[in-house]
Image 1 (spheres, one colour):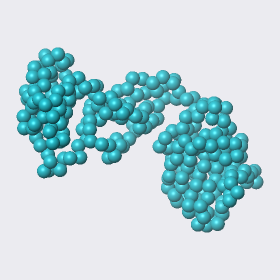
Image 2 (cartoon, helix red, strand yellow; image 1 turned 60 degrees about the vertical axis):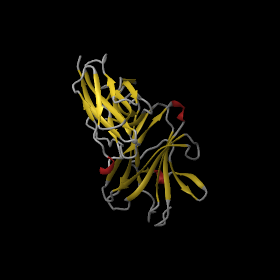
Image 3 (cartoon, one colour; image 1 turned 90 degrees about the horizontal axis):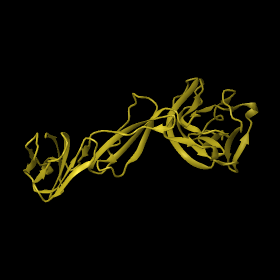
Image 4 (cartoon, one colour; image 1 turned 135 degrees about the horizontal axis):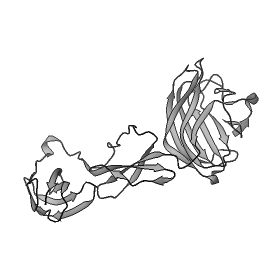
Length: 288
């Protein structure tokens, strides 16, 4: 490490005796511009003389010449328990350095600084200094934050897709890679280690068959309805009715009629699949 153009890895190791959550990492961008470019940071748990299990990794672009730390939020936060033993924060780059990665008195670690050589990981004291890297760790694992979930409208395949600290946080809905179907998103609030009930969105449809020649128009009436809802314009294969909580409350096959009798008043999502596999969604207001 130290020859320009060569890949290099350097790390700091901490032995923690408390639990918490690692949310952010930072690398120092020196004023001289020696640090800058594309870097990867990986958080490992465990390991005595080398990093243990990789828990989260992020590739970032560090701006040169800042003269300060540049922070980045991890895509996957890392929960650290008392059994972890140690935490390793490893930075790496394929760009290489004409000088070693930035170090000085601004970093700190009880277990010192490490770099990877041809012989493996080796500890170095850097003349009493430390690598200039940091991580943001909330030592109370119950610190207030929000959890964001995604699921199919029938409740299947629910997964945690993000955790956020701020109320006014922007999150890409992660829509592009989903299969066609009906989806809902939910948010819960965690405080003092206790998670609230999940508040779910209305169901939203993803339909990539919607090129003009494959589109169809289904007529759903009456709307509002109190008895039987009729569907015209398509040969129905299946109809599913969802309430505002994303729960499927009615389902019929091979029928262009569906009864909404007995349903509570409110807005319902009617998902129609025709005999050719095309889908259509309509909102129906149910009144008693």
